[in-house]
Length: 64
Image (cartoon, rainbow, N blue to C red; front, side):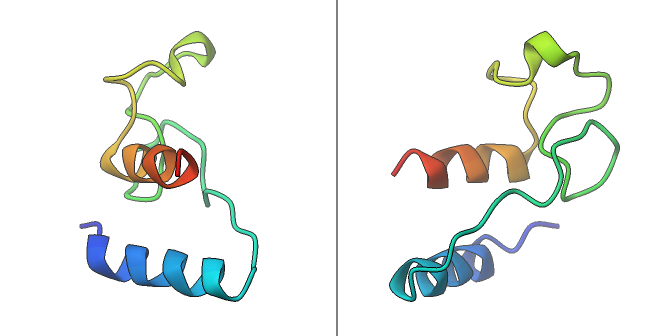
């Protein structure tokens, strides 16, 4: 379960206080923190459809 509201609140706090951040895990294991779905190859990491909900949230946040 990804708590979208809490994630957005943290990002807002970090931005307001000029604190940098990064994605916790760029991996393809079956964990909520993983950015990629299982069995994603290196060439698929940035391809739509191979990211988890967490990965999509981070990409959207970093695109702002």
